[in-house]
Amino acid sequence: MGHLPAGGLVTILTGLAVGLMFGFVLQRGRFCMNTAFRDVVFIQDMTLFRAYLLALIIAIVGSNLMEDFGILISVNPETGAVITEELRRQSFLPVANIVGGYLFGLGIVLAGGCGSGILYKIGEGAFAALVAVLGFFIGIAATLHGWLSPVYGWITGFEVEIAGKNNAALWELFGSGPAAKWITIAAVCSAALIVVARGKPFEKAARGYYWSTTGLLVGIVVVIAWWVSSYFGSGPRGISFTNPTKEFFFSLLTGSSDANDPEFNFFGIFKSTWSALSVIGVPIGAYLSAQGLKEFKLKAPPANELLTVFLGSLLMGFGSAVSGGCNVGHGLTGASTMAISSIVTTVAILMGNWTMVYFKFIKPMQD
Image 1 (cartoon, helix red, strand yellow):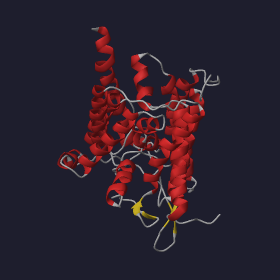
Image 2 (image 1 turned 180 degrees about the horizontal axis):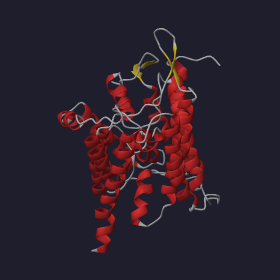
Image 3 (image 1 turned 120 degrees about the vertical axis):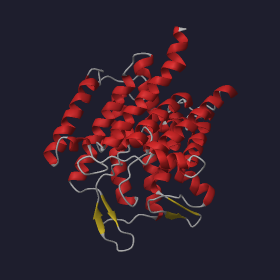
Image 4 (image 1 turned 90 degrees about the vertical axis):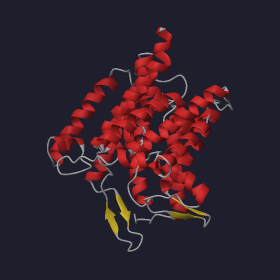
């Protein structure tokens, strides 16, 4: 099969398709990582957390196999040369990863959804989710380009090298080479699989997808996104929602996505990226799923709740911009690469989530 260079209708359709698949699965499985993390401490229910762990296992194994077998490729747009790519692992910025991840974790509880959750809930008709997405974008833009940019510049200035690399993977704490890599992957995935197996993964849901089906499909979409973004989107980027959300809105507002990755012309109207189009696909896929289940309904909460959602989403935007990604960008796509930066950020998101759950839900009930 010949390689098709990024750009044009193929890039548009593949970006939309990956987002659509992701949104469909998220809605059909009611999968939001805010809920997955929250329920562990709030109602002692690990159902969605097990779905998350299963998705992570699939994503880790699938993405690293593609990397080792040289399946991730891109094409130089100037020369047409095919380039074998590695998975993108973010630099380890401990202060930014911890502080940004923790604040993002606080924000998703207030906003009522994570970076992917608020997008798919738009497809269910939730007006609060639309407010959250707008606040998320404003928080990102203000941090990267606005009055918070000096804070962003300072907090991301602390970089740490491990094994001589600023973007080391977990196995490089123990050694290098394929043996260290796959022994580490086997250990991590085996531990996660023990937790997954305790949740009766082979039963069926009365409605929608059972948690194990949801986790399996989420993991598969993450793997597909690595390959499709590499093959059609000018390099392996996978699926995420921090910079792509910014790129989507910048494309609409300014005609250019302000992206580090190559852009393509959208029918000569504006320039955008493959990832920005995947953002559009998520609510569309969720809408199709919600209509199929007869769960689409336009709904809006009271004004005071909308204000809480908006403030929480601003915090989400700041936290994800500082840490370099959201729950999907770090917690699934980034963690699938075993990057230390993404693992640390994901743990910080979890801690932030649990902190806000305690103060917003548990403590008021105790009082």
